[in-house]
Length: 445
Ligand SMILES: [Zn+2]
Image (cartoon, rainbow, N blue to C red; front, top):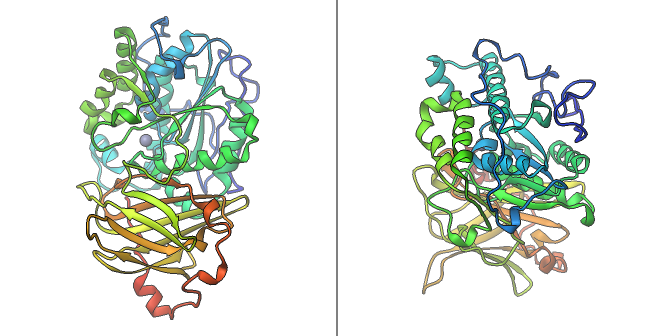
């Protein structure tokens, strides 16, 4: 992705533009560098309110901020910054903290909202470009409504609905960008999506943030809090690390900021405005563990030193249904590998193929639920040998959202010494056999 333009951010003066243009502006993937996001044309969103005065209501400890703080919010799409952190941003500014908001995509691949708003069916590249520009303008207006100036806002221009693919393709560009921005801003509080968000872009960005933070020196890591915008039912109380209760004035300002995202209101007005009535919930980044009660991969452990054992509780729903693919993402500095395999409905072999090249990497099996035990997938533990971070995900064949987001595995260290000879399958399958077993790509359009 060397064709993208990159620029840097500064915290020196949040009220004035820096010489040389806007911070953090990048060209879209595969495209040319864009100019400043001020040319919003006829559909430019208008700010609905002036700067907030700032409330001084109590905030619990994980989110306590003061003038020494620097807050960096990473938003996958325009609107996430307001929905998830509209109250926190107001609170940070009122406390005198520095604030920076980076949008990873422009939200340009948003076809149903665009069709409903523009009354057109066919949407081509030029239409998406225009839609992305409109959404950038709406984000700027919403942030100005919350008190965040244009010069505290940046757009990275990565492809909307494409962050998941960048993750699987082994693209390092976004990791380098995030590492650079985090190092440059040096936030005391980093606010980013959680792994468990059901939107593939959100969950993939959460993994990218984990990979970027791993590249920073341990002493340079900021305090983190995560947000979930897309979830199935209320987040359990155990997941809520910090709750920000908004004052009536903050809620009203957040509501006005949400209204700046007019492109999203035709189809989701009620759902979006609901974010102004709610408390803002934040999660602490959880260390990878053997058990995760909220993820369909309930247990993940290296069993007897030879098998990577995954215990599954699969539950489809309207947003994610059909056959299940198991994804395994492995990472060590300088290399990332994505493996995928279709799970049988009940019992049978599980074959993991390398993303892209398609060669068979490992073979295991799925054992069905029996005697109170859940479905279990057994894979060679040596799959994890030599890797530093590992993530697993179940992806349904149909539906836009995930059954669950990515889940970090804790067993790389346990698998480190697994003898190579225990890999049960090493020879490539015949091409036709491999093609028949390879999971089909899901169309998220
Ligand atoms: Zn989003």
